[in-house]
Image (cartoon, rainbow, N blue to C red; front, side, top):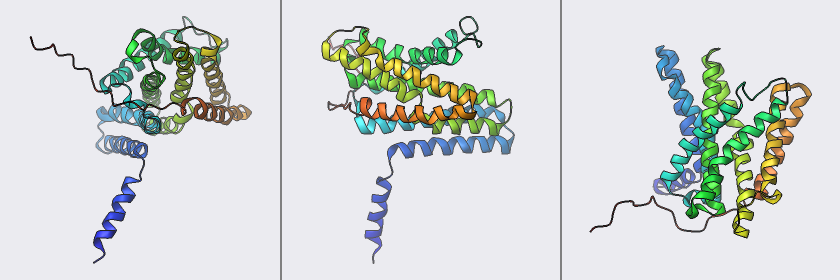
Length: 279
């Protein structure tokens, strides 16, 4: 009668599967099923849903992994995080769309650096603005949580844009775009925004003053450089590909040294109860 111990072992094994992997697999499977059903049924109206789910898989998995390591997701109320993901990511996309338009962007000039500069500034604007304006959010863990939410929204919307553009070629091309961007998530937008935000918030919290000094801005300068190197590698190809693994390696090292040192030890922050007191 060894059935009971076997069941206990199976439960333990299921519990050992990381939450980030569960989140990624769930979204990836549902996205793949959506694309398959769209092709088999010849119903293209559901393709945008598959694009959204596929674009969200990588950023959500990374955010779950980070908050399981640092607990920063507990430092900000979930409604604020969700709003920051939607509004902050949307605002970052809007900012990048304006400053990467032909009015400001000249492909003949230093385009790779300009795109990196615009996008990295776009992603830190919302979390750092919230840090400055909202006093109850002035801590490094909270700044990190808001940065990851904004970057996740930006990365999701940007992946959707590239995938929808790839649909002009084929459904397979859109799937390939989503898969590739999901794989590079740990080396791109989310860790870069986290590095820049933590580097800025840490001295501000320690000094009790918000000043744009070199001590607070070196992280932003570093991730702009890493982003520009990544852009060059993807666009130029050939021997320029060597810049991609170098950028990824430096990103991982900086992320481990700067971001993973942050940890939230306080209580879970619940949504604010804004109901008026009983008269």
